Image (cartoon, rainbow over all chains, first blue to last red; front, side, top):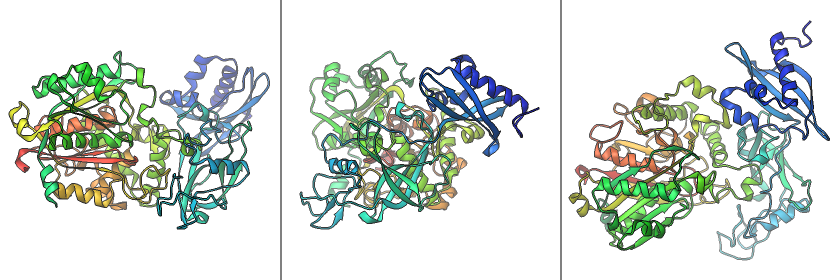
Length: 244
Length: 392
């Protein structure tokens, strides 16, 4: 009896074997399961637990776009990770065409810090206090983003950094699948939104959209910002967004 | 048009061109300096000049090799000009030609070499985006120019209504042209529409084949006065008009550009380009448009008035219309960054000149007006319009 309704029996066997091969570090088998034209992307998409030694197939079911979706839990020496793989049949053979860690978490990057010239430092220090601060000129009431050493409107060097309501509309967005940095591994794909802030003269600010992988993202959609504190307090927090 | 603009028109010309082979990235055994020197010596030979007579250097995109070091390696008699276009990555490609032309037109130098060389061995990975992805971008997972261009292309499609088919047509034309160019990385590798559509997503809406991929290679062109050009062996490609820069509320703004889905060729810049040459958009015979990614290239053509904005873009952006010799807007006739090879757009300069000479692998018959567009959606963009002697 097939324990996975709606799923071809041969796929169930392939996925079970794939999980065992991954846990055993049998790279030849794992690579052969990856769709040939996206091996590099798939390899760097998901992050396994350190000292991975065992795998358990949690679920396997028909998914969207004619793909089948498997959840496999990998256990390591101290931690575990769940991978969601999506499978496609090409010329009679089953291949992984997408894989990611679940739950969907945004990348925390070492690039989240004030720039070398410090012109944006009040923004980052504001985030540490749980506030979104955007550069503003009190003399001519101009909002400036990205920050500048002087006001581009009236050239005043005296700029302030009012606290701004982290709420706005999506001006544009992209869902990134390519591992452009090792820090993205384990979080791909993720969505970055460019958000117009009505409270700051419609200046736009970037941020990762929480749970953006499966989200129906549209330009114009309302979003609310939340400040995510870093795991290491030496690092800086970042603004994340959530569909309102 | 002012007297100053007229003085620039046709006063300089490109007389020598060369690309090195486009090596797969990370595979060249030469350093970027060696590749650059190889290209310069080949360009000098093409022009029929002694490379010792080069007296100026112009580059862009923070090229690893200063003009002074290149000049020293060549043992030139004298260096009278050495300039770097600031910022904008590939947006400086035409601006570097323009700087060389400005130097020559004003008598600051007589024989200026424009060059760019990349070898991953010394330039490292992603040399094309050095210094462009600061904390306010990378801190939010925006690590690469592909993501910036994807975000802008998303709005170009979703809000402006430019059909995705316009992007595909541009890529298809580039691959088609590469099949006649033995030097192209995609030579002998035609792109099946199904392969394009099913290729892996890089950053939505851009898939693999919407993206250029860098090579280890170098290119060089040599600019001199119109008078000297007429004495040399090649048919001169005259510089008719040249523009560069960033418009209001455009440059280095971390996605706050006002004309967000523009490529950066703002109306005043475009007007200056056409008026400087005394040419209308419809008169251009052939276009080399920088495609870091397909979407920004389409945005460039819209900015220049060569393609209508919004859904109507599809009327012009059709494969049959973009290919030489029969299309009304033949573009990227050697394959472009996407299918010929990527050295920050340098190959596009070389091909723009080949079209004037009549030596393109996909020649547009009697091409007399050849447009080069550099660096779409970068903080700096630039353009050069080349002409044959028939349009002077």
